[in-house]
Length: 199
Image 1 (cartoon, rainbow, N blue to C red):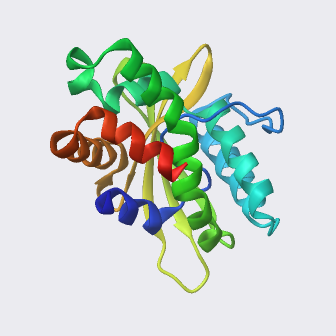
Image 2 (cartoon, rainbow, N blue to C red; image 1 turned 120 degrees about the vertical axis):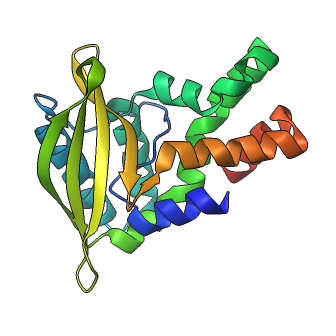
Image 3 (cartoon, rainbow, N blue to C red; image 1 turned 180 degrees about the vertical axis):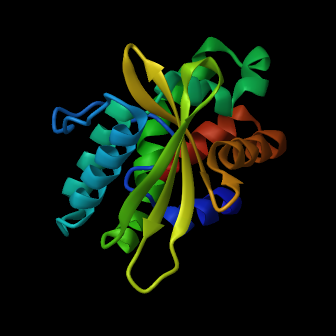
C-alpha cells in the first residue's frame, strides 16, 4: 500500500480520502451549489476540524465529511471493479463494511501534519457526463504549494468528490492498484482482513 500512502501523505487535503464512511450527524453543511464553492467549503471545514487538536473529534469529523461529500458507491465499486465477477455478494458486503474503519484508521492521523494548510481554488472545468474538475493549490506555511485537481460529480443534485489527482498521481488509480496487488498475492478475503485490521 506504499504508493497510495505516499500520495496521501503528500497531500492530506482536508478529508480527501476517496472512500466511504459511516454517516455522523456532526457533518457540517457544505455549499454544493457549484463545484468551486463545494471544494472550497469542503476543504475549509476539514482543516478546521484538524485544528481542534482533538484527534478523536477530528476522526468523527473525518467520517462525517466523507459520508456526506464523497461519491461513495461509485468509488467503492471502481476500486474493485475487476474483481466483481469473481467475488460473492458476501465478500462484496464485507469489503464495503470494512472501508469506513480502514480509511479512518489508516489516514486520519496523517491529516494533522497539514492542520495549518489552506486550499486555494483556482478554477473549475466541466467534464464529460456533467461533472467538473476543480483545480486547486494546497498551501502549507514553509512549503511549496501542491497542485491538486478534484474530480466531482453530481449525485442526487449535490456535488460529490469522485477522484483526486495530486502532483500527477491519480489517487483512486493508485489505491485500486494497491488493492489489486493484495488480492493477486493473497486473495480477496485477505484484502478485507487487512482493511479490518487497520480500522
